[in-house]
Image 1 (tube, one colour):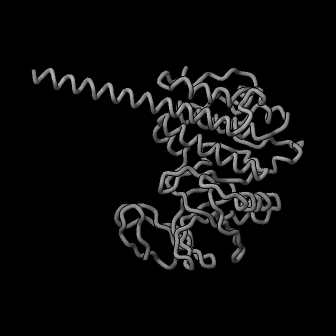
Image 2 (spheres, one colour):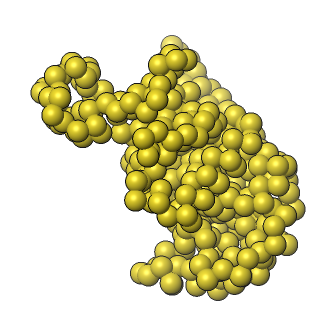
Image 3 (tube, one colour):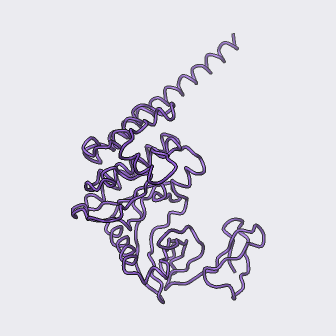
Amino acid sequence: MVACEACGVTNFISPDTPPLGTVPCNRCGHPLMMPMKLKHFELRSAIGSGGMGSVYRAFDTILQREVAVKLMKAELSREPEALESFCREARAAAGLNHTNIIHIYSFDECEGHRFLVMELANCGSLDSRIERDKRIPELDVLDIGVKIASALASALKHKLLHRDIKPANILFNNEDEPKLVDFGLARSAEAETEDEATVWGTPYYIAPEKIKREGETFLSDMYSLAGTLYHALTGHVPFEAPSVDEVVSAHVNLPLTPPKLVVPDITAPTSEALVTAMAKDPHRRYPSYDDFIMALTAARSQLLVSHLKQQAQSESRSSNTKSWWKL
């Protein structure tokens, strides 16, 4: 018997249904998954999927808590490069302890299945919020920016670069806290730049110096985070073009349109902070995450003051109107 997450009705699932297979709920049609046991973790429903595997909401029967289990695709577990990437993600994130970095609990194997057990953050991604709402409120974007920049600063203290900051890699938990995930491309900040045939990263948020193979530092992650915040704030990626090649070329060659020119309601301090963090020349960006965080925090403070002034003026007008009617 499996309870539907959408409507709460308990359904009978035929034992002939394979583990992780789905059937529609009898009442609402929502897909119900046949649970699968991996040691003491019971996989109960799918959360999402990616290139390396799928993530499931699961229950730890020993510690009696909900967790997320990332199950690697069986075909990839036999490929050394893919397996190394999966292991790298486990090792990288497991060595970090920050509120806004997803916590890794264990990395294991069971009956040929390799899986990663981590903190549950199943309230959607920044990517899904942008898709749903088109634009995220400026105050929320600044809050996310401060927290994820702090997470990246913590990773940097452990000599780690994330290398793939994008909206899909920022998830939210039940408390609406943003969580940075997917350290599969992470590498040491002290490692020499490799002469790779492939430039790793997501084209819409990739730093120009990575495209030009001029070296990669924490400033490349800063650029990608600013590009991610730009997308959330304006509803548009920093550079839009018909093809990926043209998008990549734009990061190198075209000037960035300040967010305030895309959406006039955006405040100048927020717009300026993102423009600085996305400077073509890494040396013209903020020299540290602390400086970037201070700029975002200052923009947030000014925005709050502006909101309070508007609220006070609105209340004053309302009070004057009531006084006039009394007269």
